Length: 98
Image (tube, rainbow, N blue to C red; front, side, top):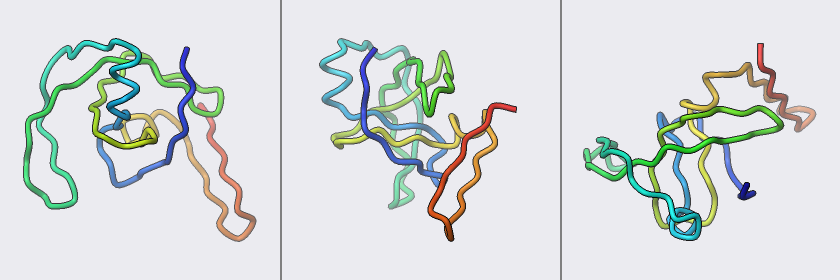
């Protein structure tokens, strides 16, 4: 198992892996998917099937893409499996598997 720093991205419909992690882990693309970034332009990109564990909760057979970034982006494809609560006043975050 490899541990990566990450950010939660509620605006991302698909999770994004660092390209360097894909290379180090020797992941092979299983398919191509169409995605649109901040600019809204659709792009076809390779996708990888991975298992992701966040705060002790695991999502298996997740399809993710890779870009040249330093952290994983945890998108709604992962977050939709859980109840996520962000308490801004107390600066806490809780993730529960219902």
